[in-house]
Image (cartoon, rainbow, N blue to C red; front, top):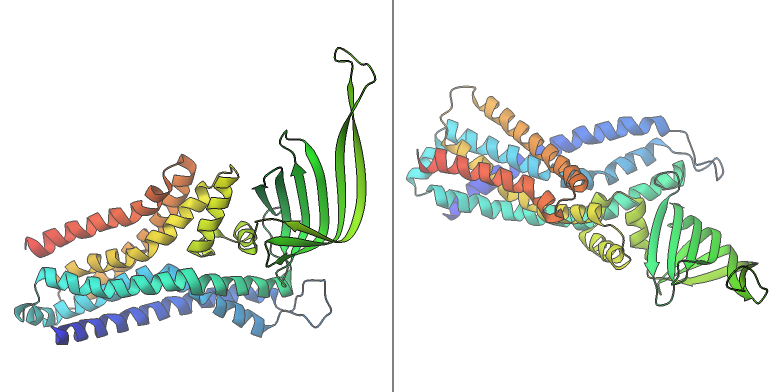
Length: 383
């Protein structure tokens, strides 16, 4: 059994590596072509030395490779495994393996062991390597092309503290991981505005606080007057006091990772960061449907590698004519692309229809697992 495992694992791993390398080369070429339009430009805020050059474009493309690998790994596992299984069946090598004791269930167990390795690899790439590389790439582009932002007004974050509620608006992040265009609105328990603090630049501190530089702070105080007016005999007057502070420290639990989640694509963030941001949104009575779906997709997506090897096993039990293997490999490509598209479509549908986040994220994998089990039962066990 060790010899069979070494043979199958070696062939499948090499095939998956070649398929993944081909896909990554294609996607990297597209990324590089897309970056050519930015060559020779700078962000307009620094001198002419900070010009976006071809070396910066190549570095940015290289930093996008982990994200592409995470997205393409299940498809590569499917295509690579189908190719090896079909080739073994065409050359009658798999028939020899079956006569040597490799039954259907043992073959399935063999492939699931290999799939578990790619599950762990996919999780490590998607949760650690891809977020760090994508963030470095975004900061690189921010240095030469401008700041990182979303929409017209940037990101809005809310936080409830023991006595007041705060709403923070961050327009962008610069290449130094500093916030730009920061506004902090403070409300009391009656919903009245207590203060507004604005600063062109702010940075994060390790002790869960922000430092706002050159902050302009407006404080509002409502006072009751004894002058008679109307039925209650009193009237309220608002008093506004303004001050300019060179440095203003705002204690808050909104961390740098939460701001990054709000400004960057949530699918590029790690599972831990998404979980913390979801808890923050729920604690402040904000909707977290979109981020919950992305969280569960991050949980279930690596498991799709197991589904892909299950889909590939029935191809070892087909009878191939000369040259017929190409059609089955092409069918594997189409199945992988359909899974990738369905996985994205169900995320949007679940968000629009307010489905349970875990259901929207797990449905594509469940459907393809049922298909693989059906194919396994029909082509392998019954025939």
